[in-house]
Length: 283
Image (cartoon, rainbow, N blue to C red; front, side):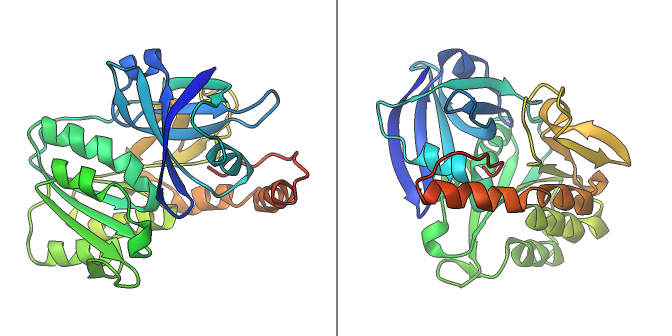
């Protein structure tokens, strides 16, 4: 059992938890994640580790209420316990001094980008960050990213904060202005990451994306998280979650993510109706 020691609402339907997990906190590196389960027979879902406190043995998880399990998790209060927590899983982010790096974050993908941006800054990079959300109230971790970024720009689709538009609109402007970028890291909704890759493609600047396919066991055994990279099958849980964006078959990834939408909706509806049961993949 892993006790929740702190809980804070960051935005509507987005919650930040601090959870006791000393062994995971001790070994974690940027880019890695955990898989958790709330109850016997419950579904296993992957969540990025947004931060750790090694001295206190705590990990930070940021959860968006989307499906049944994330709704159940978000309803837990301080003092409650998460039944199973496995990690750190996945291959850590490759960190080196690239020079000038673009960190592109969309929605709750910001929880992925923040520790990566911090590690890149600590490695001596100049970090330019674009943080995007639909509206002001959905912007998260802006203060934290400000600390680790040489420049932070916020974009909102409705113009309620910062630049009005998408992260790719501002990224395109930066590139057209001739801003030097040696590497780009992006995390967020799959269509956003695909759009970032297409913006970067003509410039041939290395672009790394953090993928979020269906995932069950986290050890490469179930095969649910397979993605096509340069036409070859890779398992995101052990060979990712980060891959060369130019090599990802995004259409296949999005098709696989849509496979269980009817079941996911049914599970959430049953949960909201108080009937319980069902399994939802959504994180």
